[in-house]
Structures are given as C-alpha cells and as structure tokens.
Length: 206
Image (tube, rainbow, N blue to C red; front, side, top):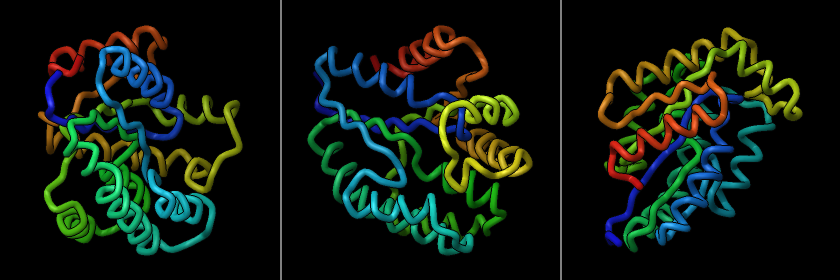
C-alpha cells in the first residue's frame, strides 16, 4: 500500500445523505487494507466536540459562528488530521472549510474575504485532496429531514437559507473544479453509490 495519506471531504446541505455513503466507503477502504480515520466538522477532538455542541445549539452572531468553526478546525487539524496524513492514513471527513463558506458565507452572508484570510491562517495551506459535493434541491432535503430527526438550529433554517448555502457550495466547486466532484444526491441510494465509486476510481482512490 502507498504510504501517502489521503484527505477526502464530504460536503452538501443537511439532508443530502452523506453519512450513509461515508459509512460504506469507510468499510470498503478498511477491507482494502488502508488505515482509515473517520472524523467530522465541527468536531473530531474532545475540544472541538464541545465547540460543536455550542455551535449547533446556542444562539450567536455570524462572527462568533465563524470563530468557533475555525477554532474547532485548528484543533482538529493539529490533533487528528495532520498526524493521520503524516503516517499515511486515509482521512474521511464529514464537512470541512467548504461548509463554513457555504453556511456562514452563503447562508449567513458573512464576509468572504475574512473567511479566506482565516482559511489561510488556520490551515497553513492544508486542503482536501478530493471533495465530494452531494448536491440536492433544498426542498427535497427538507422533506428528508422532517422525518429523520429533531433539527438543530441550522437544520431548522428556512428554504431560502439552504438555497443560498447550495449556491455557495456550487460557487466553491466552480472555483476549484479539479478538487470537487459533484454527486447528484437526488437519485436512488444505489445510484448515488455508483456515482461515488466512479468518482473515486477516476481519482485513483480505490
């Protein structure tokens, strides 16, 4: 096996169905003999998980949201992601910085220039090798969430918020097309899995 670590992120609006496919990919890669580190944002470390709870459930202004997200990300990077990549592990992360640009930048309308500065400062150049963007119409996502669980304060936002989030995600993809692969998440689960398999195969990540 190659000793080079891989950093793969999964993105998309709430309800796009990322988790099911992260579960399957984690199992597939483990069976293939890779060391897999499965993680998420906000979260991934004891400190970042505490910040996640505040982030998802406590009312705050957009700047506080952004600072919490990047504080959690910094701890996550230095404690989990960078050490895993250094030893050759394959890191699967449910959300990363693209989510901050989508939710706080797009959804909240936060200043993108500030987000870009924080991204450079906190991440010191670290970017995912591949980002899988699960794209879904917000009305479909809302219908899925309504029967899935009690919403957190982001999931409870209105459809217009998620339209802005989706647009911001697609803008990120258009700016970095080589890093992103769009997964059409409105299809049957088996068809979504096939898209994912094809995308990973084309990128040499099997």
